[in-house]
Length: 310
Image (tube, rainbow, N blue to C red; front, side, top):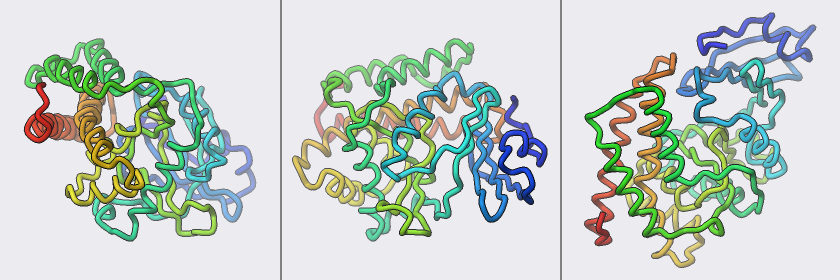
């Protein structure tokens, strides 16, 4: 199925038989850069988000793992429920959540900090596990392998040298599988939903889009969020103090800083893959170039502030 596929009333009834006999309203949701999204309402009982998978996203997303993760975390009440999983149709249907979608400036609001940290900590401390590991360096090399298989050449970026520098950082971090926790691995602002119906859950903040979930490092998780929201350093430190509960803060800040170049290089490579294969109208090249430059800046910071040799 192509990403430019339009969701029609007849198609809705075919995919979701429970909608037969109801007046159906379909609204396309804007902003997705991986999948095409629709809100489908059949009042008063049904309110869904239909995701049509982006072109060739199966190259870097394991939908089976994503669905198993979403089912696994349902009891945590920090994410929408899966209503229909239709892999043969390249479609997932989840419940629509009445909520405010966060934007980067919202992370500057002190009153939201604890709410933002809460679902991240709930996942990390849940003790839940899935049969997928998201090791940052391994995933970066895998994404680079996909790029090479596509015969996509971007000589303006020193990719091989950058990966060699990341290998040094990975060695310095010296983490092991004992450090793995269940992670979301894509904590951009738009993946945080602040519920309008606060009584729905003990956590008023939900996390959506679990496509990259897996067992990983909490340091990478926070580093990824910081590289997405790009808040001032003092706000980063306050969020880390809340997340780590003030425990061993100097070391935890250092470890989080170590992982900052990794998410930017992962998403940089992802953007070059998307530029090569995606049919979504989005400037993937500029998006990726900014990510690459941010990663270089953070590696320089590791050299200048922590005295690392990279």
